[in-house]
Image (cartoon, rainbow, N blue to C red; front, side):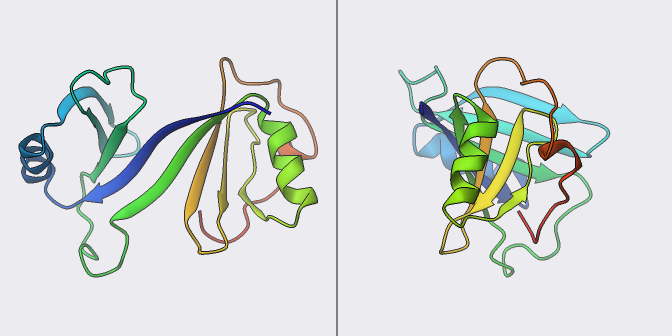
Length: 144
């Protein structure tokens, strides 16, 4: 099964201060997404010459604040990988004892956790797959 590294997500308390820090490291803003409904901003930064997104750091800033930061260990969010077939990957993981914390109900996104409790986001390559069972009706399990 083909798999492709996407990004590492980090939650931030002060978006502008965080961007300034990563810019000091030499990273540049590559993309920004804002969600009015979700009340968050995502900023993707990358090293020069890697604007294709293969080495992004995703800064996630919640508009309503995140009072637990920095003390609640939520700075590090997740690793993200794009997979060739999200249903096959999730089935393969389940067959090997991995809990699917956020099933791919939409044919596009799932979350699992490593044995060390690191959250891993799996995204379907290309277009979302057609919705299918058992995934469509599978409930979330634990945190992701």
